[in-house]
Length: 283
Image (cartoon, rainbow, N blue to C red; front, side):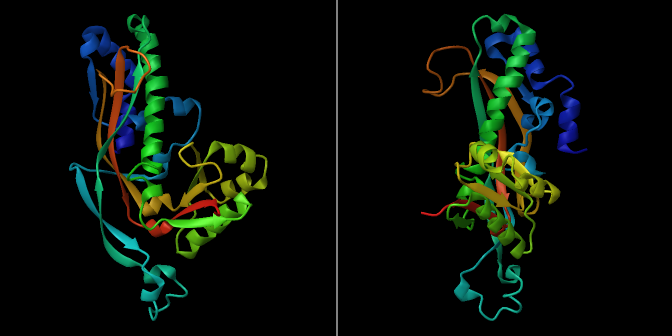
């Protein structure tokens, strides 16, 4: 049974409902542990379809904190002369190796408004629609621009453009396929989606091509992150999560209050950094 199926079965009651039930009995000592990654069972996305970054990747369940994996990287041009058919097939020049990924906690916090702790249904909705939304945003951030996210991956190719954002996206799509891969998906900022892409034929063209689009603030306006996500990388995850009452780090909130944290545990194995391209304005 897949982790997604397990998550679906385990959440006939939502994560928020399970926490609210436990909170009624345990109060400030509440801690609810889950045997799946709770962002996979994130119900609000069913009602408001919108892809999260994690949905672009295949996933692999792991047990240890440190994990090694195979890689292919692009060597310097000076090292590829004479490789058979290297001019025709860029991937023929790639260098084989090993990489390492660390499983790290990804978390988000909320404060329970005074009085809501007495309303089990209201508390459940608050956890589902506010805490898990923040957790999904934190996951987007970790996978995109976190210390081990795609934008900080060695070997990511920069694609500068002059003036025309859409031409930059088309050039990156072309470069992906010149590597023998597929322009499977892209991550864009909402401002570019609505002001540069919406209402133009590019969205229909991309849809016909099967390309997926994630809208998130974790890519800067005027930029885009394109790649063959389904092939080139894997999310490594523990299949564990927790929602608990806790003490947030200093600076998390402006005022004191009863705080709750949701936490998942993931890493990113980028097998083919050669298959990711960062579109951005030149200069």
